[in-house]
Image (spheres, rainbow, N blue to C red):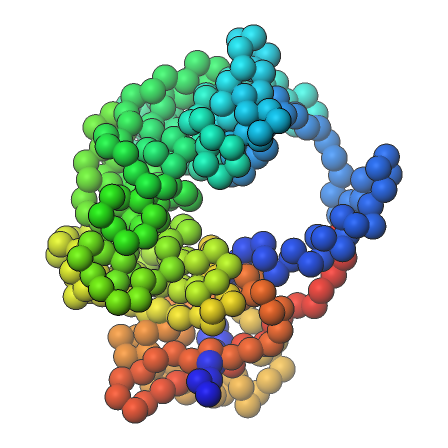
Length: 383
């Protein structure tokens, strides 16, 4: 029987999702009564907006001039209400992106809604938002602000949102895609990592790398994914991408999370090698920028890999034996041979269907294998 193991170094990478907390949320929801006052802990409700009755997925809060603007991505509609009414225009519109001025959180005015694609739930809407100022982008207009969003599962778009009440489309990716999801845009470099489903790839979500330093004229750099996902490959297909987080040029690392709630893979990539390395999506070229990889169990999804660098691990503070072993292991570890999260940081497993302690195996070279033991650093709590 195969064993899995996880050794926890001093840096941390959070792999977090919502599956682990589903039982707690379900239990809490079952105990709630209609009309009961809301429960809070260390916070209080200041204000809210109903977003025209549209479900919210990813909000981005951006400091824009002397205001704070919320750009909120939406799922698609529902069979009962596929096109909620936009009170600003008087027209029913497919869910897309809401723009709200949250400078005064007690009185947040709704500024605009950008319609998305037709479709209910995950099939429609415009779930993802990223925002960059032109003064930060290398080739942006210093007087402008730009919104990058998905256009349902079909495309990616960039809007000029200098006046957030009057968003203007300035770019849309040509050609249809099989799907999209949670992309990442480096404002300081302009490099964007788009979760896309390029036709011909064996999965509906992989990565397109773009130079968006000039938001009006993005230039594609390459496609990227796990070996086995690329066109022409054979054999088992690794789980599709959910999203990534980049540390930018200075950190030179990108953390990819594959698998929402099963067959997860957390991959750490050398950013410079990804951008400037060989572009043809062969198995060897896709492996070239990889620094480390954690292959999770079939009942775990990586979902989101969030780097928390140089974060002290309280659980190890009083464990001299494990702390000493950790120091020794870091001296001996070869990131290319280890191919695991220990190369760059700790993996905090938050997306775990079993919600139990466990260990993972990090594949090594030849007969050598290293095991990292992971214990859940928290207990269930009521929310």
